[in-house]
Length: 71
Image 1 (cartoon, rainbow, N blue to C red):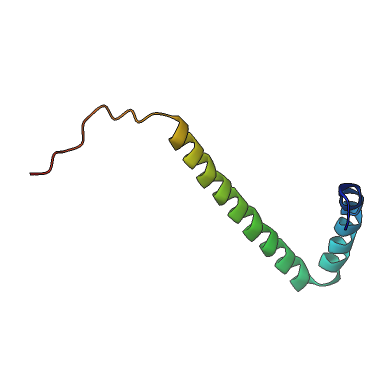
Image 2 (tube, rainbow, N blue to C red):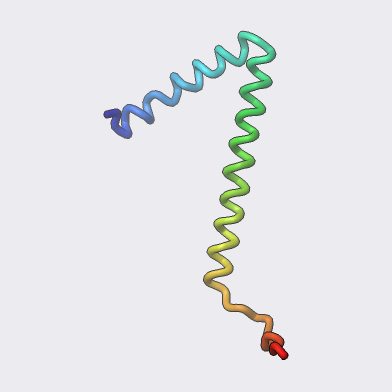
């Protein structure tokens, strides 16, 4: 099993490999860019939703009113 040091040291090799693939063909560059944007958008949206849940759980409800009574 790869340790953390192995993973960290393989990052430059990963960047080099992705760069070679992206520069070899324009379609590859477009696909890598779109894939990266989709992943970044998904992670950003998930982070935003998780932050909203955390804030909602910590901050008290400040509406001040009572809920309407059923008749």
